[in-house]
Image (cartoon, rainbow, N blue to C red):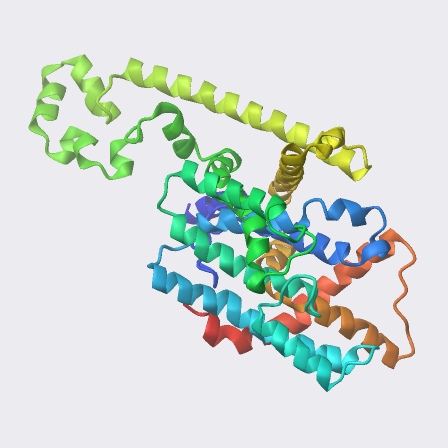
Length: 429
């Protein structure tokens, strides 16, 4: 029985053990979504070799990771602010520093270009500056410091009302796009990627605010869906919820409830047996109404996802019918944000469909390491092939896709296990 229940929880993206990032209620489809994200990160960075995926990937790949990070924030184990900062230093900044230093070594040894002492010195200075985006040699490492800044700022706002959190994130997004001298997201310049954090925090906020509702729909958790629809937090059976007062009077020792059973008072008896202070007819009507409401929510969600599918396909083929709005100053920037969000929701649905593929989930759980290793593995594989007189030549999009899959597997199997052992003592909470 216990095994069956555990299987059902896993099928719906249910609970798993707490991971090193403090996620105590891990959702398998979020891991698959992260796998999709890291796959397209690797693919997009192959530039023209990615073919038609190249312009498409840059519509959403970075926003997707910040969105997922916001989703995961709702699942994290609660900590005091000092504990939270220390935890993020251990799980984000220490791995970032490790990968930054290893990248310098790998670049010095394997790069086919001059990289001497002056370049090493410059790279060390850039590390102190937080690996500003598009400046440090390992292009993906800016994400670490940017994510750290967003996590800390967002934690400071966590107790605010959601409206004010959203308002601050929207204002930061617009300020980054219009008020800063640099052109974001393409030309960031602030140390520790604070300007990029201003821009991408809105995607993090979207994940944080949207995920509880999304998860209720995708998980099919009737109890969780019933509550917001009915507004009745105590609608669950009293015996199961631990509410002894609403449980069967015979078990709770409530003499009035026992008397009602013995006296034949059907109305009172029904209320006692229902465990919620309502008779059987009232409970049946409420359950039926709730079921209809749940079905309506799921149908609406399916319709929204179908629309996201259509829009994503159009974007892939370069037929964005909203592109005419991009010429408008503020509206164009917001449309760019919504475009990424729609594509992210499309891939979220795909991730839910593929949630039982263990290989995808496993890679998704290691995206932090995969992000840190991107430049390293892309330098290492061609250098290793050259030892045997081979050359990596990608002549088609299909070959590039297969090559990216190979890079992910090699990194997952050969590099990450050793790196995890090395960093374990720093990342444990």
